[in-house]
Length: 432
Image 1 (cartoon, rainbow, N blue to C red):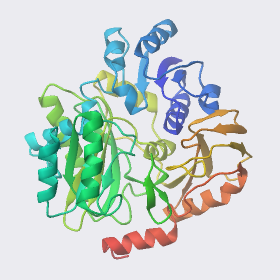
Image 2 (cartoon, one colour):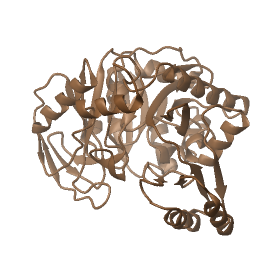
Image 3 (cartoon, rainbow, N blue to C red):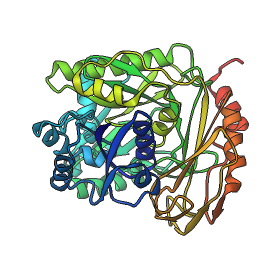
Image 4 (cartoon, one colour):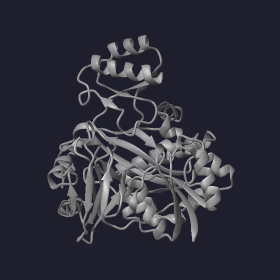
């Protein structure tokens, strides 16, 4: 069996670990929490700081791993990938420099601008508070405030959603500037967001099904931003509220980004995902990320038909085939979280009963304990996912399975629901 290093202990990494084991890999896991599913599946593991690249490298060497894969974005912002390569261990994840496509929003926006890549959004980076104040005062349209580094999906604030007027937005931007030394102001665009993830070796690109993540904590897409409350995919690889040609346009942008990075000597190898927005008239790039999304990565890995280990070796060796097969099923995923998640979480214990539903599975995230009894943290706990012939059918199956989980928790019932799907289709002007 091939020995593989996996770094990360969330729901996404549980899905990666299961796909690796299906590929008959022997998994050596590094994680900060005692995720019961990953611990059960792995040959060996270490509980440690996931950004401690010295200790992780030592574990990889002593374990004799033949391939490495990094799950969380903060780990990609360390020299771990580069040091693994230097030690002769192939890695199917991007280098520290290539991961800047996610870890530096300034780099991402400037790359798109330098290469004339479509979908860019007007933006400016500020280091001077007076210039920032002057710019915001003169703006005649709504805007978005973003930290330039990693925020786990929680640092972005949008006018009209998170702040109501330019003065509030300016105050938040100044807070970021004081803390980070830089802040990004972008024009606000409106429409339907979606994620397109791809496998790439820096030259070849293999796309995954389009997914939609639900970041807002409460039903009806209200409340604070979170790391993601759930996600959906459809059997036709697109989504019912996206216009014809949108998936192809998004994939074209992803290919252009990957080609541009290679041309600049900053080749990207790993999983890249673009977060896009379908507006009334065009397609815009909201963010570009350097790893599987969470939760969207769970959705696509859950229906992956091909051998993940073969794909990852193709990435590391620069020999990725350009088509990867997925089971032709729709998915709906809903995260179980502590009550108050996103503001004042109240973690407790969860009892996980037998899932008497053949098309429903549970993935373990930021928890510890056993398969049947887990201790929650302040973050996401369990990812309940179902497959079906439609998104709505999968969503209904998840709701039925919630009776198997006992404890004090919250989840968004509306993810993938008939009502929400109908509303999105009508809003997009798609005829059915």
